View (cartoon, rainbow, N blue to C red):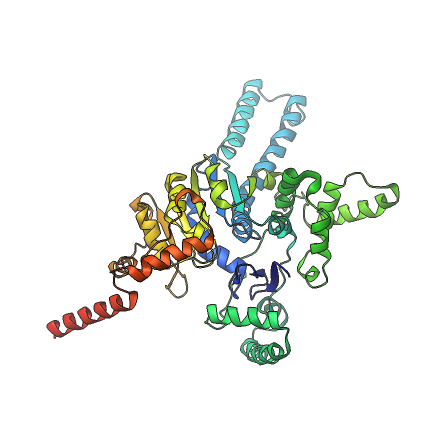
Length: 477
């Protein structure tokens, strides 16, 4: 039996369904969209970037790396203009210094003092361009499944129907809605004749994410260098054991190979197996030539690959996150908590585990999660976090939770009603003393506490709030 199954999401990225956890890694709207809107944009990375020499990020439950990839893409896009400018000025300075030295750009009549002043002014102007701090992003990626970590840089991102239609169909024809009506009818028909596991995944996604199709943001893209940087980091970690026999089987599996980018697989194989036979040399040279000009070109119009790669230090910790976290002494500016839902992975939502994250968060750092549940929020509150909501930019509805040690960091604090929900039975937390209990034991302990608790249920709390509001309205009337 397979551990997981891939599926394409609406933004062209690839989602995963886990058979072990009976849960999906990403929403049907898209892994990239979710990463950008729930983690990257609310993280405040724009305020940190290039104000600190080192920015420390913890990506908890890396999966196939969309949060890390989105973050890296954001950083490269933000730094691209400055790094191009920096390299341009370096080249100008280098060439001018040569000419100044040989006196080719000066007339003999020019005063030597003026020449010295010109050199000083030129050097100062170049130095001022380079005064800006370029932040190095240290990313620690924690993940239990090493197969997913190894596969992560090979996943494709395809063009979405939206992007195809925007390019092909003239905007005067409003046929995009028609397309989605037809697509919906076709998907219902194909679902009836689909394999059982495919039907299960689709039904699961529809149940979990009830809203219909929403217009996607085409700016949510993975930068073309990102996967190559990750490949290099994984090669440094695994050495000759990166693309092993087991991974080759996964990459060539007939049902899954359509999800993988062949050029990136070839790049990784070449980097790993640098001793190749002579007959292969010519074809390999042609392949590397294409890779270079397609992805890693260092022409003036693009940031250099080496410059982009130097922005990041990636560290992969492949183990139970509870064990990995105890080995880390670093203080993080941003923590992405992207574990499976509480009922599927309670060990990563326990009071004791969150306490370890609190210890490793910097004074003005933030912890970000997609969860809005009373249980998760109460766990964070019990660990002395200040909490806020992550709001959808389009609808204004909460799509996640942000936690911090300092109250001033929180932009949209929880309301009294939301804090009240945390104090109901729904907010009863998981406990894992020693960070060693198995999943079933953690779930059973909370279930027992839930049944024997004197706290109000969330339904009772909501009714009492409604009654109070009605009484207040009656008094005002």
